[in-house]
Image (cartoon, rainbow, N blue to C red; front, side):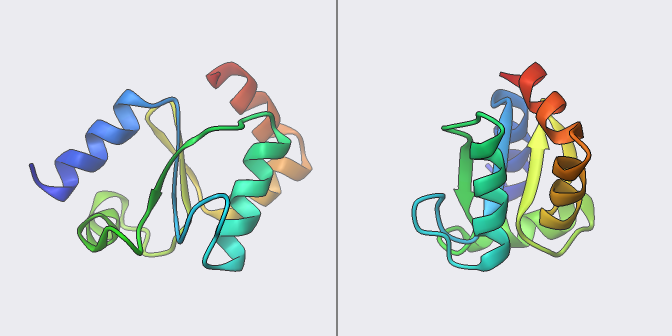
Length: 104
């Protein structure tokens, strides 16, 4: 299975998917840490996460999948939401909480 096939399967079969550097318990960059904290603050205790540092094929595939080279990337119900900057903006105005309440 190609990296793109794996990514499509991950975002299709899981309601909340976060591609990040590290894990929610041990994030490897500030943006990934912030993204994981926002999900937890919205009541998503166990999102499906993918550590792109451990999966270089997925990391490269993410760049091709949606033309966004930055990590983290959040998907909800198969739709690309954005990175930590978009997540923070949505969190500030309450959109992220609403989106995630519907998702789980």
